[in-house]
Image (cartoon, rainbow, N blue to C red; front, side):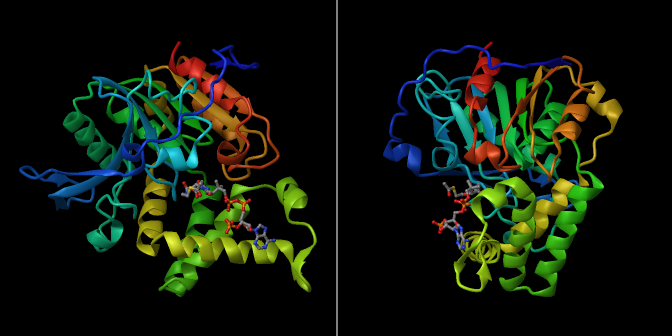
Length: 332
Ligand SMILES: CC(=O)SCCNC(=O)CCNC(=O)[C@H](O)C(C)(C)COP(=O)(O)OP(=O)(O)OC[C@H]1O[C@@H](n2cnc3c(N)ncnc32)[C@H](O)[C@@H]1OP(=O)(O)O
Ligand SMILES: N[C@@H](CCO)C(=O)O
C-alpha cells in the first residue's frame, strides 16, 4: 500500500455552478420488471423502484457516488465541496450518478415496503448495477463514504468487471465488534420504543460516534438553556431532526446490512482494482488505524488521512484537502 502524505496538485477550483432544476429533482425508474431480483435472503423481489440523481451528460463511463446511512442521492445538498465545476465530481466533465439505496427511505423501494425482509449490501449492489445498465453505463469510478465506503468494498468484490477505481472514505472493509455494538444498541432503542422515540435515541447514540470528544469540547461546552448541558440539548435536537427525515424500518434494515457485511482478508487480497482509502484522524467509529490496516490488504491501495478533530463526520463538515486528493486519484 502507498501512503499519500500531501495532497496531489490539481487545477485551481472555480466556484461551484448552482444546481439546475434538473439536478434538484430525483428521477425514478422501475427495475426488475420481467425477472425478479433474488435477494441473498432467498426472497424474490420484482418491480424495484429506484430514485436517483445524475449530474452531467450521459456517458458509458460514470462516477458512482454511494451515500452514507442517512444520506440521499442529492449529492448537491450534502457534498457541495465535491460536486461542481473544477471539483472531483465535475458535471462539465463527468457523468455523476447517485442512487438512493434499496431499503432506504428516499424514494427507492424502502424497508417499510419490504416489511422486514432482510437486505445485504450485495443486494444493494445488484440494484445499483441494474440502474447502471439502464443508464447505459459500462465502466464506473466508485466513491463512497461511511456506509457508502462499505458499499464501495461490496462493489469492488461483486463487480470487478465494472469498477475501474474506487475511493473509500471513512470506512473499514467490515464492521468491528465496536461498530456492530453501537448499531446493536441503536436497534435495541428502536425496538424498545417503536414509532419514533427509539429512532431519536438511536440517532443520539450514533451522533456520539460521528464526532469526537475534542469536537464536542469545542462546540458543545456550557449550556444553551440554563441547567441543561449543551451536549444534552444538542443530542435531543439531532434525534428530533432525524426522526423528522428518516424511517425506523430503514434504520433497522440498513444498519443490520452493514453489520452483516464481513468480507475476509483473502477476499480483500483478491481485489485487483486501484483503491484510495481515506481515514479520519479522530474517527472513533471507524478508527483511522483500522481503515488503513484493512485497506492495506488490497494490493495496490493508497492511503491518505484527513487530519480533523471533528471525528467521523469530518468528511461532511471539515473536508479540507480531501476534494483535491480525491480528484487527483479519480482522474489520474
Ligand atoms: C445539507 C444537509 O442537511 S443534507 C440532509 C441529508 N442528510 C445527509 O445527507 C446525511 C449526512 N448529513 C449529516 O449527517 C449532517 O447533516 C451533517 C453531519 C452534515 C451536519 O450536521 P448538522 O446537524 O447540520 O450540524 P451540527 O452538528 O453542527 O448541528 C447543527 C444543528 O444543531 C443545532 N444545535 C447546535 N448546538 C445545539 C445545542 N447545544 N442545543 C440544541 N441545538 C443545537 C443547531 O442549531 C443546528 O440546528 P439546525 O440543523 O436545526 O439548524
Ligand atoms: N452523518 C452521516 C454519516 C453516518 O455514517 C449520516 O447521517 O449518514
